Length: 489
Image (tube, rainbow, N blue to C red; front, side, top):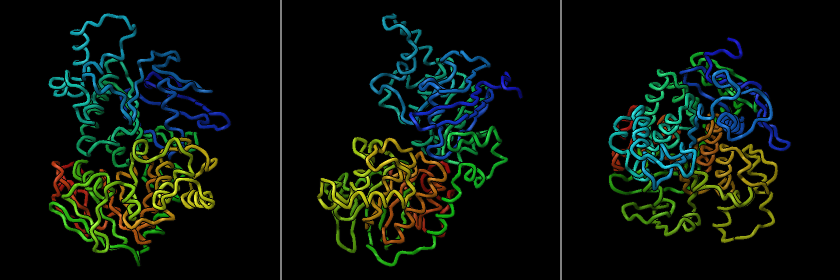
């Protein structure tokens, strides 16, 4: 096809972008055909987020050509983006969230009935039930999947012909993800294209037609059908083949010492020897209550935790840390990073809490530098902000807190959310190494494929948050987890 082929809704050619001396995009190319679902892949720091922000007008490119419908001066409403962190106003209704952003004059008198009908029509394109039953419901009262549909409806109401979805399934269950994919396919049949950024390869293969892969700001795979690429080829194109080798090297290690952890509660009694990896599967309600108890975020008396036979009750998270409990969340912004402090303080935070130290010690710089080197974290300086790191690197930074002080119990809550396949493999290797050094690991993930790969046994919670069973190693499969949790595999 020619560069300005009318079959393309979007053509981004030779896109360049630098921040100071750092070059983020280096003549990157991306072409999206009308009515296709296109995957944008790449390791953390490859330039995906920067490219998306350029496409939707949030950033100005330094060079290159951008055409929509063959025109360089396209309507700003032709492209709409839905970020992982949704931008809705929770106190306003579904209808108001859909139509309010499209009022161009602040003093314009809103014709409420007409605007509401426009919002209903936009939402009905993707979910007729939601449009019929929730139009006047405050956004705060609908679930996360429904909020995402409201964002998409808002984009469609503006006349968008290309949707940019950044990690759209990061906070969704498998069933919700499948419903979203069905909606995207229906929109594609109407000529609306979707660019989807995701690190979940099974989902990418389920929904996308073709992919473009970025590496170090350059396009290394351009519009290639996913059926022509294996997962290994994708990982290699992203430049992360070494991470898979590292994981294999750690897999054979076994723990020889550590703490035995017992967990008892409604429908559950398990004893975990050192080095065990216990998975938690199911919708958030059940796993999150158990996790909060393990890390001292609540005092749910239904759950009893013992370490080497001694009962433990943690009134606050700091007490849990001092008793040897580590915690890593996939929600870096809310539950992980200390964004106002430098990388050094983020790495030594757990050691300071455990030792009741609040000021920098002499050896902390060396400890931090050693941790960054062990985890292959590239940072300009240990005094830089953690926000200068890519999302996947930030996630490794949270794990770095526990390298020197291996926890007796390491609790993981979606630790690979929003990271690329290569970084996932690196995180798997880090966790296996910690288990090999004696940590008991409790791991909640909404990715059944991840749990089946990592865990020795898995506790399944049903849709009500009740324990529905414990699946032992020989019986673990995605099908078994789907049946036990009531969620789609």
